[in-house]
Image (cartoon, rainbow, N blue to C red; front, side):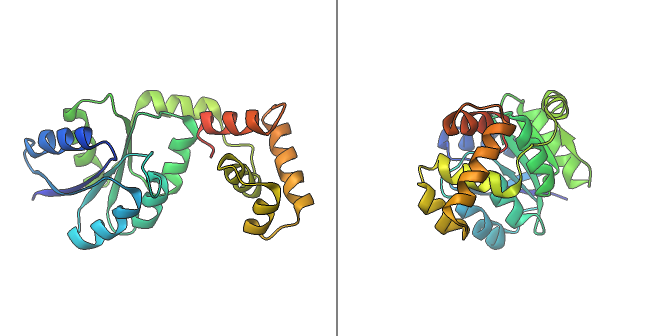
Length: 199
């Protein structure tokens, strides 16, 4: 049986190279390629791949959010250059079965695709160890939401409006996040949370 694969990566050269290399593998066929996260679900619905290989950083929607939307439709492998510990935990929560770095060989990616297709998991050992060492995010869901909006440049009033909270409550969430992340200000808190993959 041939494993049908969808590739999602915003870097055209990388996506094309991966497609060419995977098509050389016995029993693997790339049936679709997309360059934006918001194109993943429609492509999965149209092409019905067995496995979707997603980058994390893409325009339109990040790969983890896209994974969350397609986890009931196909198996998922995350292939990323951003090996942040929090990403692995978020990926597992989104139903991802494989997680490896872009420095992996085409043979290793093919092995990961075959393993997740067989119902197993494939995790890069270094990324898994880093995720275990980093522990869980100390941020609550609301603190994370407030920080994420602040990272996008939203004002306190805009964050309050988007989250249906008072401005005082938003300030409290941001202050709590700064305390939990040992940050002197909001910018440091955002930077720390992004480096850990918690945003």
